[in-house]
Every structure is written in structure tokens, then in C-alpha cells.
Image (cartoon, rainbow, N blue to C red; front, side):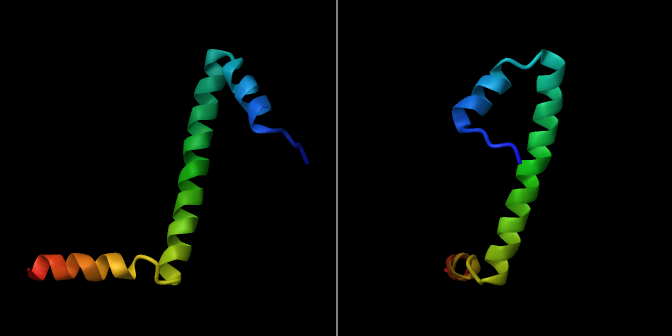
Length: 62
């Protein structure tokens, strides 16, 4: 497994050729979206957003 700290990753990204940077952006966007989706699903399963929905319904009723 490759281990790198944030500074090493930042350095590597800032020194990528333009085409590689474009490929990295596409990959990272998909990766980040997948992580967000996973976290959102976990939050929904655990009932985290329920209070937000309840508040929105109360606000709507007012």
C-alpha cells in the first residue's frame, strides 16, 4: 500500500501535466461523489436527516 501525506499529494498534483491533471479531476470527482453517496446512505439509515425533514414539514405547515 502506498502511503503519502497531504503535502506529498499536493506536490504531486500541482506537478501533473495538464492531461494527467484533467484525468485526475475526473477520477477524483467520481471518487468523492461515491464517498458522499455512501455517507449519505449511512446517515439516512441511521436516521440523521429525520430532524431536518421534520423541521421542514413544520415550517411548511406554518
